[in-house]
Image (cartoon, rainbow, N blue to C red; front, side, top):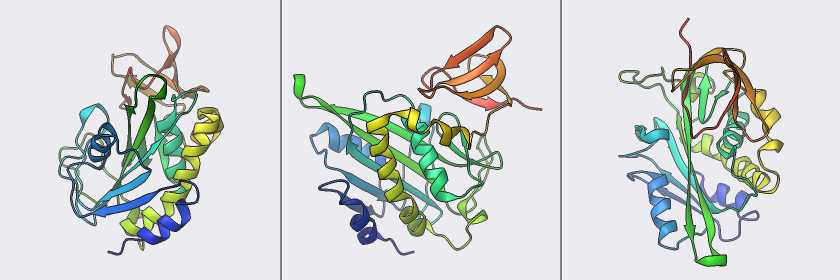
Amino acid sequence: MQWPPEAIWESVAPLLPGFTVEILPELDSTNSELMRRARSGRTEAVLLVAERQTAGRGRLGRSWQSAAGESLTFSLGLPLAPPDWSGLSLAVGASVAQSLHPEVRLKWPNDLWLYDRKLGGILIETASHGEGGASTRHAVIGIGINIAPREAAGLSTLPAAVKELLPDQDAGTVLLRLALPLVRDVLAFERAGFAAFRQRFLGRDALHGRQIVLSDGTSGTAQGVDERGALLVHTAAGPQAVSSSEVSVRPASG
């Protein structure tokens, strides 16, 4: 498998001064590594790829297994100062889905779906650095995507793979497809917030109009998202707006 670090750097560096691309054979987690660096004051813009992750993480502490060649796992780290952070994972999902294929859908709040199976996931973390008025936040945007088919054993959602849609693509070519649009969209989010991405998300919303169950047991019908990325749910008790920090969502059985 060939990686395209120079092509990625040449396309992205004009947007992010000091930007670098690193591809490592193995890490515990690209997100964990960039969070460690940020907390120690290393806050340069970087795209970090691990061919294999030994302790990859998803939302709510779930593990994300990663084998060389079978998946693409990377994190984009950069200083970010949006007026409102709400909806960043949805904007990132909309960017990645658009770069991949028209069939890719988005399951709120941070999953990429293909035909109701999980193609990938997004994990966003932030670290503060500096003191007082000089304190800023460093965003670490982690993305994991299944490239080749994988075993479904032990997974709550059946897996999907990029090669089902794009059989000639490998992890390196997929990364090249994603990198520049992702950086452009993250910088657009910093300027305009989620409102600029809402229609793109709604156009790929995998849950809209479907019966869903929230983690607290509430059930209802998903009705899209609002201007800040909150999930809108019509329940027996009336409409609810649900933030990503409050619930996980699964389509109701049947």
